[in-house]
Amino acid sequence: MSSRKFTETLSHTLADWRVTPQRNPRFRTAVWARLEADRRPPTWAGYARAHRAIVAAALMAAVVLGAFTGRERARERDAAARAALVADYVHGLDARWMRHP
Amino acid sequence: MKNLLFTLGLVAAACALSFGVFYAVNREPAAVQQALRAGDAMAWLRTEFQLNNAQFAAIQQLHEAYGEKCTEHCAAIMAAQKRAAPSAEIAALEKTCVDAMAVHFKHVAALMPAGQGERYLAIVLPRVADYDHRGAPNVQVHH
Picture 1: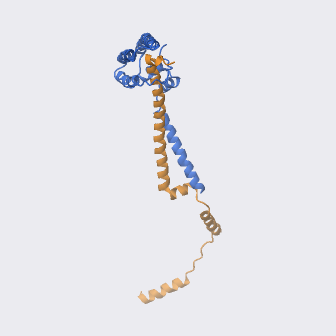
Picture 2: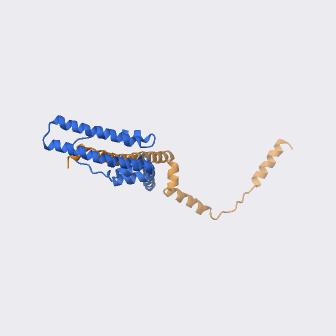
Picture 3: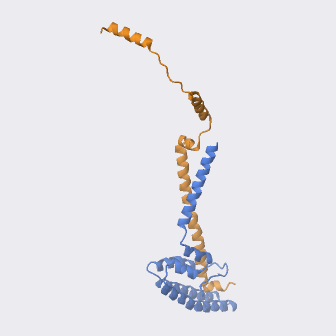
């Protein structure tokens, strides 16, 4: 087959070709649904994904801050109670304190 | 805005949870805490320095014996003050009291488990110097 004849055949075939796609009755609804979804505020998961670096950093900082302050507060509290008890214990055995009623 | 607020709430909750966990984990053991809360020096000694029953009984006995000596020192100091004795005499009586206390604490430390005695002395000896005439103590040492 010559090149010219091939081109003519192809042109006829393309000219005769008709596409008859099946109608999707839900196409319009689906498009509107997607448009509506974009208009709605994002879910928290979507928000977190969009700001993942900031959210992760804030959570990490909160955990570290909570851990540090929790540990310090526990130690301070026990240290204060211990210091008071030790002072009472030692003073209770100290005759110099006993003359001050 | 709602998501931002929710995120801030989550961050605050994470901080609070972390605080709570680390606070609980870093507190003293329950027995020590109880002794500290009750202001019970003997219970504190027992738990803080991990005394067994024999060690605790021996230390309790030492404290009771020292209590009598302490009362004598106290009476001597008060008598000297009452008769307006020279300050050198009062200072000498106070020194006797301080020396006796230091010896007593060393005896107590010697009865403690290895390593605990040094820790005990490091805690109590600096307190002997902590005398600033602020008032009388209230301690549950003598049982």
